[in-house]
Length: 339
Image 1: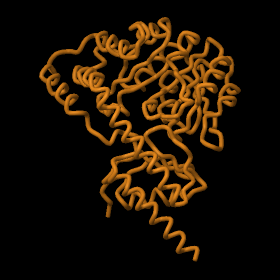
Image 2 (image 1 turned 135 degrees about the horizontal axis):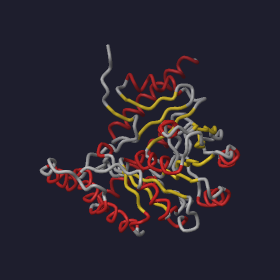
Image 3 (image 1 turned 90 degrees about the horizontal axis):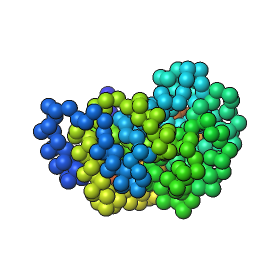
Image 4 (image 1 turned 135 degrees about the vertical axis):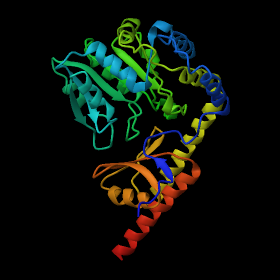
């Protein structure tokens, strides 16, 4: 008999629905669903630019962060070029490379789950046009620090675009977190990619944005799909920007639950490394395959990479307690089996 999914902890979604003020803005916008949205999202672009304290010509908006990433690849990559990225990482990167007929070049993570910046640079060849960094990293939650990122950017040739995916940046609390926007002037080949899907809880509405030099952003905008950002999504993002303080409290609660999960799992004997996203990463040689089975039996849907690791999205307290109970039971069972 199939066990029903009680807790969706596989896709790094927010455990919270949109705020009441955001839902109200969406409700009002639905009334205009028979009208086309703007041909290009100029008003939304200006709102995001003011929020990020940059000029509008440095902002590209797209259908989720993957939409902006695809627009970037369409703008700078030619068939046969290479896109260098760490592996394991976000599954979309090699898929997007294939969509523009580029060759993805996966570079193994370091043993501690970090992106190996030296190995990424060593993987460049004469056809490399894009290198992807995910910071904080998906799925391990590891962080490229400010000093490491600055040193990396100085070594990347100007004809190679650095796609810095910061989908989880709102959850990072480390003092070494890069101030990526401060790097844009010195590095016109840098695009900082962000999204309203994770911290802002608007995953279904598909709005992401990129921040970069005006010349690079102009090329990305040429690939923008007309009418690509719908009216309900626009209203939800604008309302979310007005509710920044409320949303920050939600993010803080997710971070607190992440820290609690890490502490409790460590106390159960799992070797948990520090993570900076809205997830917790359990890696082999811990019994992650058995852990995935135990979680599934408890009705928890997690992201399982067989033989590699287990990524647990931070849910609400009830969901997280279910995770801890399931994994504590597994450890108890293994201890009993050894005796």
